[in-house]
Amino acid sequence: MTRAAAVLLAMSLFPICGISQSFIEQHTNKYPAGAKTRIALQNGAGNVTVLPWNEPMAQIDWVLRAYHKRALDEAWVEINPEGDRIDVRTAYPIAKDVAARMRQRTSGPDSVDYVLHVPRSIGSIDILSEEGELKILEVNADVRVSSRSGTVVIENVSGNMEITTMHAPQVVRLGTISGHRAIRLGSVNGSIRVSLSRASNVKVQAASASGGLSNDFGWTVQKRSQESGRNLRGKLGTGEAVVQIEEVNGSISAIAE
Image (cartoon, rainbow, N blue to C red; front, side, top):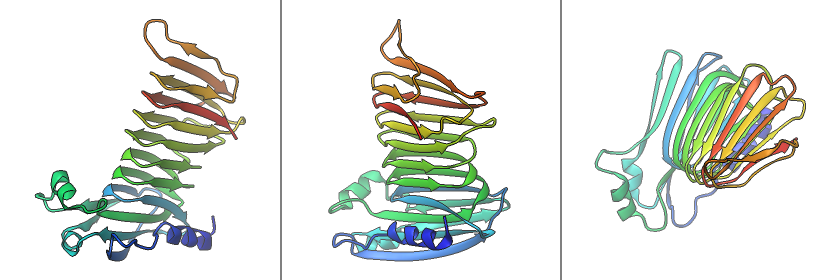
C-alpha cells in the first residue's frame, strides 16, 4: 500500500461528524518506533485502524466525538511511551462509569476513533476495544485483539495472532501462511471467516458448539459423539503453522483464496 493510498484510507475512516455528535476534537502525535516496539491500545467506543508505513515512527491520530461539550471536556487520551513500549488509553474520570454514560446519551455513545500508522515491521500490537470496528492491515507483528462488539478485520498480518470477540464478527485474511506461527481465533456470538491460500503450510483445527462450520478445502466436518457441536481438522502442505478456531453460537468459514 502506498503512503498516498494509506492517507486516503485514513481520511475515509474519519467520517464527517453527524448532527447528533456536534462536538469534535482532532489530535496527532508521533513517537519513535521500530521492529521491537510494542503498542498497546485500550478504547471504549470508537473505531481503531492500524496501517503500515515506511517511517521509523508510530503516528497516532485520534478524533474525540461527543453529544455534549461537557462529555468532550471529560474524555481524554493518555499516551505513555516508555522504552520499547507505547501505551495508549482512552480515559474518563473514575465517576464516569458505563451507567453514568448511558444516562447522559441522547442518541448513542461518545466515541474516540483512532488511526495508527506504524512501521511495517513492529514488535507487537495489543488492542482492547469495547465497541467499534477494528482493522489491522499488512503489518509484520504479533497481534492480540479483544473486542466486545464491532467487526474485526485482519488482513495480511505476518506474526502470531490471538483474536477474541464477544458479539463481533471476524474477517481474517491470512494469505499464504507458513513457518512456525500460532493463530488463535475465538468468538461467542460473532461469525468467523478465515481465508487462506492453498499454497499455505498450515494445520487448521476448528470447533463450533452450535453454529455452522464449512470450508473450501474438502476437509471433513465431524459431529461430536458426547455433546452438541462439530469439529474440523485439516492440513495444507507441511502443516508448520497452526490455526485454531473456536466458536460458540456463530458460524465458522474457511475460504480458499
